[in-house]
Length: 381
Image: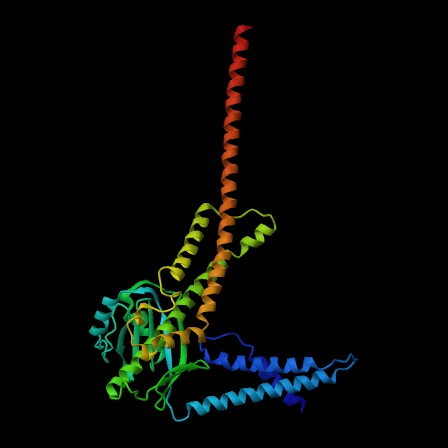
């Protein structure tokens, strides 16, 4: 019995692992944690007794472990029931550059035999380029420097984004490439699409507006574009998060040095460099991209009955894009405070340096004047 309890405790402990790029693992973790929280609330409502031994603690621990295991099994059975009878695949998004030159993207893809806009969605190629790869896997290229692929192997997507499309990249992210993925499935019994438990469900059932198979395929492609745009947004945001983390690593010693009243071993050039990096990060987040826009220009002219803006919002909520943007801005505010302190400290240092120069010049002038007075007195005597 004790061995089973320890196994259950290990299972619940394993749920505390850090977040991975495969987002569907987090949904199970949150459900298990919510089950533990609910049980802890129930146990806290009962009166507690003080004693040398605590058999009640062991009993509650057993209940929490068993309930968490049961919750995880129920979640797994529910997901298996949803996936039963459908084809389960992956959608992979990667961000490899600050921007893509879309005309160059089209030329490169056509030179490699890819057909542009195979389903006739008529989207502006300056907003998104759609093509289809091996095994009819859809590929979407966005001007933000992101590539999203459906039902394609990860190595194929990586080669396409980092090698094939490299000539069309503006400021490639050599060592800051981000890649994220989600599970998705196609459900022929549903008309609309959704994302739940970090799994995208594409409804492929023809609607009243798209009875013909070709129109139904176009609607599915449009839904993929909406989900892909949201996932590309999250991947681009991950790049900025990585860049800001590296920025903090390069300035992490400054608060410690200030708290110890130590001298900052940084010059004016370092301060200007860090200020420029911070301004560039803030501009990429809030000004030079559509990361903070509630709806990209891509979907302004789309049909309302398709609900593409809703799919875009669903991805943002599932991947906590709004919270991450707010957190990034708050971290940048903190980084701005550090930069201001550095600027103020260096300004004081420069002012002190100028004051000493002035004092030395005055001392030299006084010395010359005393020497002149001494010479005059010697001549008179």
